[in-house]
Length: 471
Image (tube, rainbow, N blue to C red; front, side, top):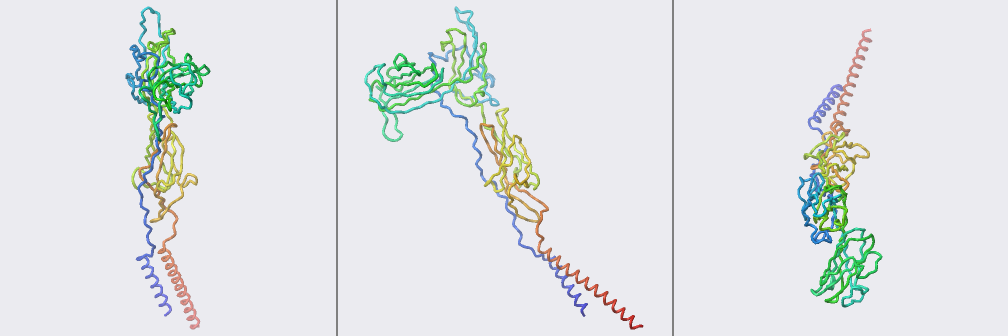
């Protein structure tokens, strides 16, 4: 009877095991985290070229009646097939270089057969603006007296020696309210006096000449020395003024290499920045004719040179396709950088995120266009945001961003799609059905072993009893 009971128990346990295998007991499956689209990230703004005030419409002021009338001089863009350089143009560099070539024709001056061009100079002139506004603080002296002192108003500007300067001054009355303007009548007149540092402020010492009946009045001069110059503003007629405005362009010359002979070649990239310039060509004979700008100088006004360009960068992988999966081992990140300015070294900063751009972590600073990233690195890795499904571990929502700079401008690019890391063979808690199977199996095996042992024990006992009875 006991034997039958044990076999019945074993049968029930085996049937229970079969039921567990057919209908496994398992927790609710963990839903996979959907692969979210990458966020709209604001790229780094490319740096802008340096801004410069454009010179007055008349171009560079020179004390000559017509400084562009010289017909025997030519300035061409050598980097663009010797295209003629013209005023008010914008010239983009070829591979980041606008190269100019200037040439004078041979001299043919009647009466001076031995006159030769010894050197040629090609210069780039740009203007730095100086703008002041003021009110009349002293007495207004009526009538015209060039040597009366004080003037109605004064302004001051620092100039370098040989710096060409354009001055424009306006006298008038300020209108009321915020954003007021300076107004004057047609009969208003003013005069400008400019005195070099350390000279007496008299009519004879002024560096500029008076122009009658003009408001605003303009003048040009070349600074004879370095220092602070005084601009005297003198009222003459019309409505009694209540204010003044002084506007100064201080021209500076860049380039200026002296070339022997009749030809000069300059690379405008050597200036070091983009901007609008007056291009001045001078020929030097070593005679007094060099002082006559109408004879010795050619100027092409307001030419904008663009030599420096922002670099570009494109992240190639990972993230090239939606839902891309990378192994949990070493991850190769590739990108491509480009710069029109040939020869510039591009510096890259590589950043990684696993929360779709909320937090970025730099993982490399390099000049290469590829790197290997170890997600498991304590320093270069990221805190895991994991979930488990089907015996694997996945870390989703990764993005890569690469920033590039050429030392002047910057740009940035982010991987087109989010991607995930995938790790196989991770250690996970065994499922519940496995515990049940192991437990049932252990009970069954134990009962079988007990029954087998009992069976052999009873058989041995019966045999022993028979032997004792037979004796």
